[in-house]
Image 1 (cartoon, rainbow, N blue to C red):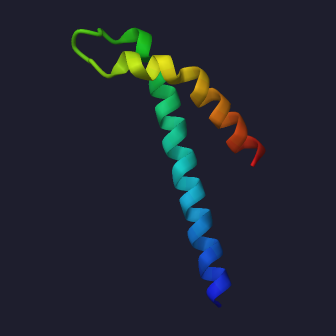
Image 2 (cartoon, rainbow, N blue to C red):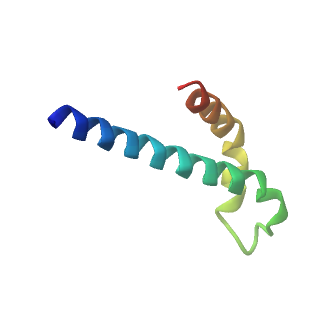
Length: 62
């Protein structure tokens, strides 16, 4: 019974992290539409976009 709970916890954690990475990737893809003076942190998401795309490919392969 303990292995089943650990598996479900690991599954929940991996799905949560995948959804979080997907949301950050979508925000990074849309970073060019935001004004850098109003949103100081959005250009950094745009710079991280290549790394986020590689991370998404790794998650798809997982």
